Image (tube, rainbow, N blue to C red; front, side, top):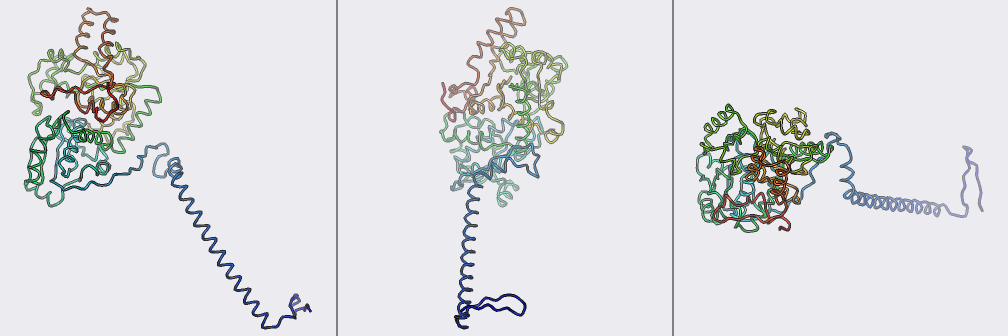
Length: 494
């Protein structure tokens, strides 16, 4: 029977008389053992549930994490800056027997060098050699001290092409010492050469000397008659691997955003700068003092071989950039809205505001990077013409309309890039036709309506639409430039 006893401390103690003392002790131990087992099982289940939750959270994070992080303000970045490069997934490295090391020195301005880099990567890949990151021109008219990594994302350049060619930032130490001692071969390749020239002439030199230095790279590879894989590699380099540095790209996006906020915009590559006028001998609209200055500059520059130039004949042949005054007439005749924003992608215009007056009167919304941006934005770009040109390049790509007044390297490379981006409108001015029409209009032998009609008719099929590249096998300099119309990499053509 049960009994209840009162403890000395006044608390009640419940017990069972029918159980013996040993049996009670055994029961207590069994209960304790069961309690420990339950606790262990509970802990195991809890741990399993926690790990399951963690795995689920990681899986969810992979999908939503990047989106959340992108919208979350960073401590190290200004909240209004969102220009983050996407994470790149680079291809596996190409493995091949190395036939030597190719060192190249690019010459000319930014876009001349850009096209040359595309060509040199393609040559190095075809010859199974190691390419050293190209050296940029520091001795030309612009005297720009920028290195490759100051303009282009060098790590992206190397990694994005590692399935095509091995690229190093510099020669290995042993070969570097050889070069310092003069133990290498240097030459300027023959212009407009096909791949057989490099296979038969350059490759044996690489195998013999291990290091070959090509000291000029502009227009050294043919426009046509090359294997399709080489043509497509030139495109891959240009449109994917030659990414500008983060600083240049971010500033370019800032300019584009400022322009877009005010509506559509046209980029005018007004190539009316002192170096172009001196080099080409084009002096239309210049006074006697300016003509003498430009002529003296041409004679003083040892890299410019042509010294005696007839500016009137050259203009009639359509080989001169349009003047700012001529450009104002042509844009108006083409029916460009006078209120559209016109971004001038160029350096300092020769003659300054005096020469820009007619253009500003015809199109009052003239802007350029120096007027859109604060001086602090451009302080690191000053005296670095290639970096300034890179900024103009980015804005030119994004414009609603691109109009170059001279078919130089920037005009051609931007034209090709805009074709690649979906044949964006690019007005390719027919200067030979235009100068004749302009002279007739100024001489009053053409009315404004007649002049405007003829200008429009001359450019109906010159708006950057698809077309076949013109090939002239015996006159490579007169062919359509490959980088202006890389049709092997584009959609359907006419």
